[in-house]
Amino acid sequence: MSRLGTALVVEARKAAAAHVTVATTAFLVLGVAAIATGMTVAARSGNPQVVAKLGPTAGIGGWDGLTAIALQVTAAGGVLAFGVVLSWLVGREFADATVTNLFALPVPRTTIILAKLCVYLLWTVGVAAALVVVIGLVGWPLGLGPPGAGLAESLGRLVALTLLSALIATPAAWAATIGRGILPGIATTVAIIAVAQIMAVAGTGAWFPFTAPALWAIAPGSVSAGQLTLVLVVPGVFGLLTLHAWAVLQLDR
Image (cartoon, rainbow, N blue to C red; front, side, top):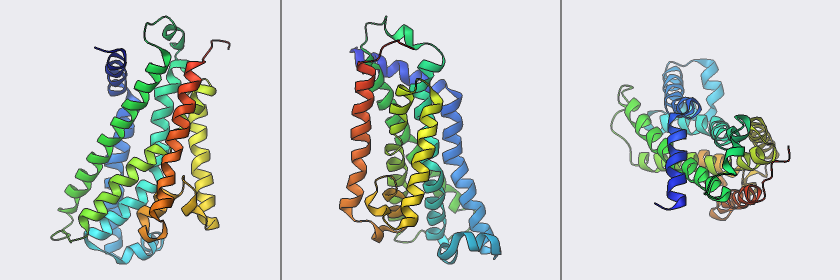
């Protein structure tokens, strides 16, 4: 097995056994489904507070309404959840003081961090797939009727939003490396969310990679394909920065 293959196996086992990963997966998959289900039922009953929070979405109803609510919930909490996991995957080596052991391994540090990022991406794909399956399952007990023609497109946007939310959380890996711990990564994630909200309110969010995925998922016509493509710049730039930070990493503090 290659060095990268060995690193992938090790990092995958650590991620699968971690309480952080398990809890976050449950939060994203079951939590989003539960909130979407609860708000759908509340909107049906005419709960004024829920109707006010959902805005125009409250009047959609059916499968389209359920997926629209799921999109809003994922847009609100997805980046934070992904940022927490990525901060843990990278920052735990510093928090647990295991980073010193990495210097003695025959596997290069850049290979180790690359394996961490690959495991993170594979996990997000699994989360996206599980979320779509669970949303599809909870719709039947709600009596939403036969799926409409637009359901596949809505679920596709949910998958895309989940994956894009994971990509824009990648600065957490770089921050956790530079800050030598988990908290700097989480703080960076919170800052991303705050700035994204400001840009959305300012009306320029379509051109801002950290805001565009949520805007596109909720209102596809508000973000062009070119604007959405800019999101790929974030993982590209911060992925390279993280690899470089691990390549030149020194135990100076």
